[in-house]
Length: 187
Image 1: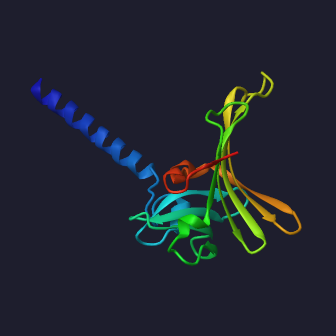
Image 2: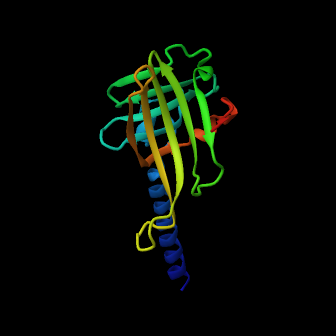
């Protein structure tokens, strides 16, 4: 009888250890090169603050900071090639971004955080938003929160605006974390 109990406990322990290891492998890490695809844009010694994959391409967005939190950098591209990196100078980089916040609840008015920066005549607004989804009652997604991540790119001279949609399911981190470094301006 004692051998049967020992065997059952050993089997249960093996199952639990296997489950813990399997679930740990599924959790994306925020370190450079970690399991999160946007984190691949962070360099050695940097941590992913916020990032997501683009909805219709293999590209992703990452806001990375160093361990001392001395700087923030925006990167856009793939793990093989960074297409845009801003700012070039790390010193004082937190001041190169504007943090915009609106709402406190994921309700009909919504809530969100934007990080905005300008390069020449182009303004970039990386947005993380949440809205209450109040579609008709027979919609399978009715009465649930709807999340959205995207990049709004606007030519400040012509006013032409393009929105590149992100994949919400790939979102890692949150823009709300920048509030300690870049006080939010309310919309």
